[in-house]
Length: 401
Image (cartoon, helix red, strand yellow):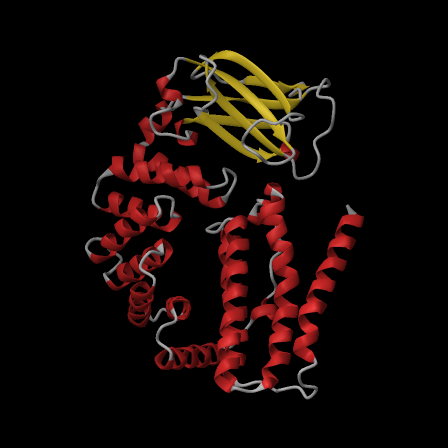
């Protein structure tokens, strides 16, 4: 493991040096930069702080956090290139070199963790919190930077990403009217981006006294038409349905959103609570479920490694592999108490409540894949009647090659 990271660090350093050399040798004298470049860098740090806050709060998964950081880095480089073209001076090379030096190594590592190792979906609670000193800016500084960004967009109004950044900045500052105008402009330039429409709907609701009816809900519907899995649009649609008393629609949206979230995240816990409330206390108590304990048996053959993922499934007794309910946890949590119910279904028409008996399976995956692979540790039991409590599943074997 140590050798791998040393080699990776060496390769990243070599690639960065290869890119930096032609930039640095163009002009020996450093350019102190312009206010616009300073704005770009400061806004980059401010957006990073917002992403970190969302991650710690459980509203953003680690995978989406990594994707957003990568996109933010690319956007920063694009904006830096635009700024360099506008000034017409070779002195921007040191600034661009500094940006590359800051962004490339972290982007490379994040990209590897996201694409090269699916196990990297860490819980937000496991990530270190960033310190205030890393990204702290005064209110006056932030407002000044946002005003400079607004001025740049007035001069170059065709930048959809710039308008989106301005809209999010206004939202953070609670300037909802300005945020709505900026989102409208961004959507005009990029009409097929679902996340822009769901963010726009949220701002419109704030201007509408918190109600999602009318224009906010129209944006939510368009967002879901573009991306049925957009988390914010699903959450807003569920809230709107609950607001108008349509519990079944709210349950449908919340169930859809729940299936997209890591089962052990804080957001998933809140959605589960919303589902229980929408179904009613009595209905929640009568919801078919299976409870029990997963343990690692002596015949497992190996000890789970850090980062291994544990899946617990309820499967039909007819031998089909589409789970009726699925729970995802870290293998380090073994022995694990579990509960499987309809909220963990992958499809609303394929749930525990539609079965009398099921097969139970617990599997430890080194790759984090939801599909079984040779070498995965596994334990099975069943048939088990739906509603049974206290079932024990011992992981005592491995899937043969």
